[in-house]
Every structure is written in structure tokens, then in C-alpha cells.
Length: 391
Ligand code: NAD
Ligand code: MG
Image 1 (cartoon, protein in one colour):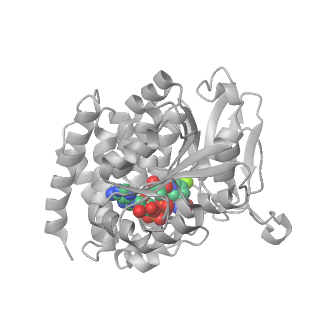
Image 2 (cartoon, protein in one colour):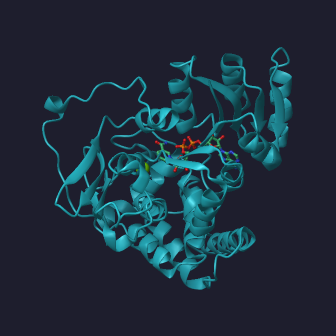
């Protein structure tokens, strides 16, 4: 029996994780569920899964939750300390890191430092703190398994003992696939007037709002490029983004002998989640079998860096190193929040990020304190710039 903590249980990845767990009561037991403010959703999940702990990041929400579930044995905690406690508890075997954004870094890191099996969906945590995060994994012996569909695909296409040794494994390139998002065929002019609802209507995947906007700007692919560099110990020059609008091939790995291995599947996050939960075993994920006859054809194109500058900005931030990826991430989070609130136009998202990267000097990312300080500095600057551009 594996005891699992789910950080971000009420979100898209959290609910998909619970759906896989629900199918395997003999294998998995929910130790803790966490959320931010959604008390009602959390109360429903607590009644079904009866976790030992439920954590609300927001203190008011925590007291409301405690009032809503007095009949349950569940203890309600709150705040970052509560999140870190259930991520690192000695009673936990595996932690699903599925909080969105920088808020997920402290509890994800707590899970890493406690040497857990860490199922990483929260790519922002790794993008922000790259080397320090991977050093913490190496130091504690945590088992880091990628849940992002592309990275899970790459992981599946590599020899399990050579995931951080591409040269030793004879790997020449990673072919990172991208759907291209809902605006793949929009002109630069069309992009100026797109709405949050249009940006969140992804053609193939149903996801949280922030990652949906990231997919539409291609920042998601930029964050994933950085994520892949850290997870697989490689560099952007050995990763090539392939826009593949069908989203059936989730990524590929090219070897020195010319072989290219791919992982295919329906665009359903329950596949990588089940892979991470049960690895190295395989379990039913509730995913419909792939019907290649009905899909018929696969297409590939190069990403258009002029219409979608975010991918270029992410590659540049990784090359700049140090705190630059944390600044990129912070500016992006602020710009996306402003776009979702109707305060910023879609094509100004990369403008805000580029201005923030230019204005914020890069320093060595030698401690988490430095990274959080740069994150805060970048957010302040990005917010000022958003005010200047507010629609
Ligand atoms: P979501 O918005 O649906 O859910 C986010 C979860 O995080 C919610 O449970 C929310 O309560 C919690 N949360 C939000 N802010 C918080 C805060 N300040 N403190 C504590 N908890 C907070 O997001 P999602 O789509 O499930 O994505 C989660 C993460 O997984 C993101 O990092 C995303 O990039 C990554 N990811 C998602 C998908 C997908 O298909 N949805 C695929 C790959 C990677
Ligand atoms: Mg992905």
C-alpha cells in the first residue's frame, strides 16, 4: 500500500490523480489532500477519500473546511507550513506535486528533501530553481518522476538507469512535441484581440487556466524546454521542438544509431500520472485505447518564434542561467494573471516578460532565498509594466 499526498488536489492534475487512485484502492491510500481556497470541492474530496490531513493554503478557507467536515477523522491544517508538513511526513511514500506556479516550490522541495517519490507536474518549481532543485534530489535520494506528458514520454523512451546521462545512453536529441495551442494558425493581428476564454479553449487538452494560457503563448513549451534540460541533464541545442497538432506523440528520443523512440497515447494526463504512481509497473489508468485508424495522419511543423516569442525568451533565460529562469517564470505568472483578469492583451504577455528580463540583473542562483528574492523583484517590476500597458 502506497500512501500518497496530493498537492493541488482540486486542480486538473489533482482530480486526474484521484481518478487513477480511485481505480486502485488496493494499491494507494490518500494520506493528505491540499488546495488553496475551494472549500466546497475540498469537502467533497475529503468525504470520498477520508485523508488523514486536508490542507488549505488559505487560513480562512481552512477554518471553513474544518466547519464543513466535523464528522470526518481528517485533521485540517493551513498555510505553507501545513503544505510542507504533509509533503514531508514520515507516513507518506509519494507526493503528487500539482500546485500551479511558484507557490508549489516550498512544499515540492519539502517532499524532495524528505526523499519521497516526487511526481512532478509543477514545472514552475523546477524552472525557478533548476540546479538547486536537482542537487536536493541527488542529496536526499528522492525519486523524481516526470508527470508533464512530454517529459513522461521522454522518460519512458530512455533506459531507466541513464535518465541523467544522455551521452552514456547514446542519445543524440530530444524531439519535444507541442500541440501549437489554440492559436497555431492565427496571424499576428488576430492574436492582439484574443480573449481569455479563447486562450483557455485548448484543442486537445483540458487543463487549468494558467497552463492553458501558457500553451497558447508557447511559454508552456519554453518552460518545458528548461524542465527537460534539468530532468535529462541536457541543453537547448539538443532539444528540438516539433509542433504536432494531433497531440498523440507525446515526445521522442533520438539515438546515435538513428533510432527514434516515441511514446504515443490519447491526450489524457491519467496516462503519465498512472505511469508515475505505479512505476516501474503498469496499471489501468481509465484511458481509452488509442485508435490510430480514426486519427489517420500525423503532422509536424516548426514553431513560429516570431508570432510566439515566449519560446525564444525561455531559451534565452536558460542560456543566461542563474536567476534568469526564475525571473522569466515570475514575469510570466504576473502577465498571465493580468491577461486572465482582462487587464492585459495577449500579445503584451511576451512584452512584459522581455522587459522584466532586460531590467532584472542576473545573479547566481546559489540559494533558495536568492531565488525567492529575485522572484519578488521581478513580480514588482512586471506589475508596474502591466499598469503601463493595461487595456
Ligand atoms: P489548476 O489550476 O487546475 O490547479 C491548481 C491547483 O493548485 C489547485 O488545486 C489549487 O487549489 C492549487 N493552488 C493554486 N494556487 C495555490 C497556492 N497559492 N497555494 C497552494 N495551492 C494552490 O492547475 P493544473 O492544470 O492542474 O496544473 C497544475 C500544475 O501541473 C501546473 O504547474 C501545470 O503547469 C502542471 N501541468 C498541468 C497539466 C494539465 O494537463 N493540467 C499538464 C502538465 C503539467
Ligand atoms: Mg506538457
